[in-house]
Image 1 (cartoon, rainbow, N blue to C red):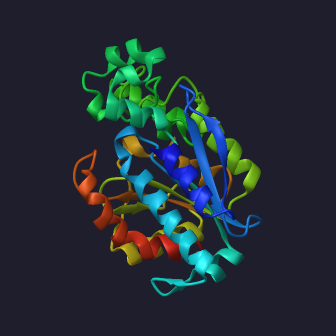
Image 2 (cartoon, helix red, strand yellow):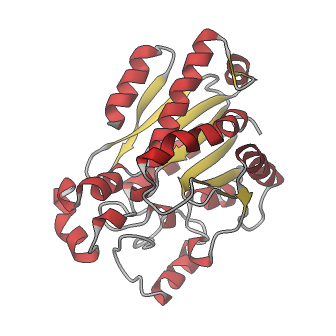
Length: 285
């Protein structure tokens, strides 16, 4: 589905730049789409976890709608899209973890190279969050990784698991390596990581830059979400944490939707409508 959507967007909008930033363990494409000023870009990245595929739908839908208004030089929810994107471009990675999504939707057989491991560590792949090797990608970034790993072990997570296993070492997975290399190469002005669920925004990590706090408050206000702090087992090791801690770049995590993962497909459109203005306005801080 994602491959078709990316190709369709590129066909409709020749000004869009699209390409692979890397491949998953099972050689599925990790796509990036960009529009606007490519010398000064914001990054939106989603679906780090298998059950959270609703964010792929949100980001693809938003990117396509943004391109329509950019092409037509028309306003989106009162925002001058052409003016915004002429100054601040946007890159979207709709799905960081394509293998995890396939496992969650279609079961272990969708990743035959790792089917035995998946069956061994996951009784029910409908609740699968990790990549095909049983590594939680949002525990695999080099930001407080060692401390988080000790915490995982204290909670009985000692090896590959459906969720919350940080891997043998930071950036052990091709998916996180791809995202790391992309960020180092592009020097984004700021980044937003999209997860689900809870209708919460996380902006804090150690010496949080004021711009991260401002960005988190802005998104929360526009989407009518709340600014919160994640539980201890979800602190450190994440993409947002690494962007703030290593790149010294403003970043936040957004938890879309409300309920229990995976959120039902029927939640997509109302949640997208709820956060659309925040998605537009948070291209710039």
